Image (tube, rainbow, N blue to C red; front, top):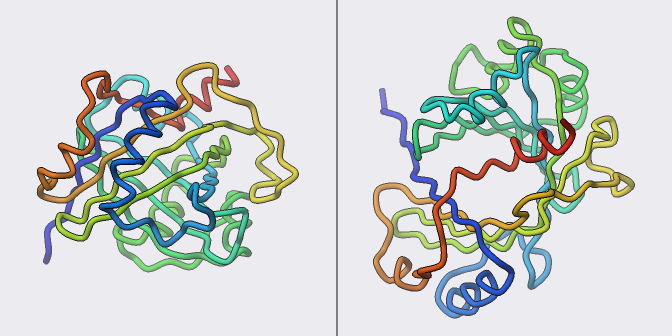
Length: 228
């Protein structure tokens, strides 16, 4: 049985100017993500779930070493690809379980109904079903933002620039362009660097900025707190 491959995930708050300068450095060197539909990147829209006790939210707020996040994610307002994801975090390392689901299955989960799943903890549908049955897992908030992403095969490196991060409580309209969003009151842009075992030195040099400060930034937490 193979051991889980946890990835490093480092986050840095950025200004618009810092993002622009860093992207200028990366554009000639790294490959753009396949999800792009414009030169500026693509839109990510996620529906986050939590239980009656808000266990996921509280774990983030308390800085718990080990925590889970449950979400459904689409891109560019399209249901052509609907990703069901359970993200496990251990310190600064992450392990994401993901699979595609149908639009009907998405609506079932949004209504607190279980969907077909294998009997495996590696299946995010199994994890969702278990949390629905034992913890009353339900959708809580929509998080949307524009993302510019770069990839590099060696080390499975992924560098993303997320901007205009915003939230909505119009859960029933998830995926619709009619949704109205509320901007964050705090920092609404973040740089994320994800990789497996190592980060190539030349990428680290390209991203080197003395002003950047590492952060435990959580889009989910900030958007939930936006409404509290």
